[in-house]
Image (cartoon, rainbow, N blue to C red; front, side, top):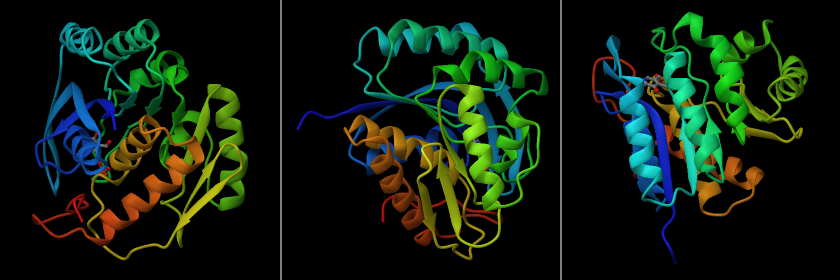
Amino acid sequence: MERKHVLTIAGSDSGGGAGIQADLKVFSALGTYGMSVITAVTAQNTLGVTAIQEIDSQVVQLQLDAVFSDIRVDAVKIGMVSNHGIMDVIAQSIQRYQPPHVVIDPVMIAKSGDSLLQEDSIAALQNALLPMATIITPNLPEAEVLLGCKITSILEMRQAVKELAGKMNTQVLLKGGHLDGDAVDILSTGREFSSPRIDTPHTHGTGCSLSSAIAAYLALGEPIEIAIAKAKEYVFQAICHAFPIGKGHSPIHHFY
Ligand code: PLP
């Protein structure tokens, strides 16, 4: 069978657990060919982020043109994009090259508490980047920023996911992992996806991996609800197989 090509546009994690490194591991684990456009380099380990160097937007542009002008792209995942200059460049490229699927994880704050998005770029994220998406995958804190209100229960999630989809004019998978109990994610079609909660500190990179797995399954031809169900099972298994690599929150394990 012809191999599918999946592109991640995201930030690098020197610890190898999240960002570009997680995305490329997912693409390989799911049998697709992975490519990367790097938007920022983070100095990071299992304890947190100690530095962020944004990549010049012109260099982001050159990476995008290098990939799209030569290689067929079957799906795109967009993760950490920390400033509006880079968001504009990405939005223009998506418009120009029209990849068939665009999964956007609107990354704002890492689990370690470190901010990965400049405050003055939240409006650009909403106005320039999110409208390019086939689907966006906010967690609860990100959805609260996008909607401007608190979400504290499954009932409120059901309402919020519909509001977000209307506001952003795109499909939304609202991830409920920040609530207690099972991890329930709700798609704006109303479909709900539930996984048992796993009691482990080693969940670094789960958000990055879920959106990458959805992109990979879409590239492989799965319809959106099947792509999400398979991606969620993949991340669940990867959390189950996580092992400690440092002093803090270690990443999930992709090759189980
Ligand atoms: N570092 C980078 C470069 C990321 O893109 C992300 C999330 O998207 C993170 C860190 C945060 O990962 P987590 O919140 O799973 O620890």
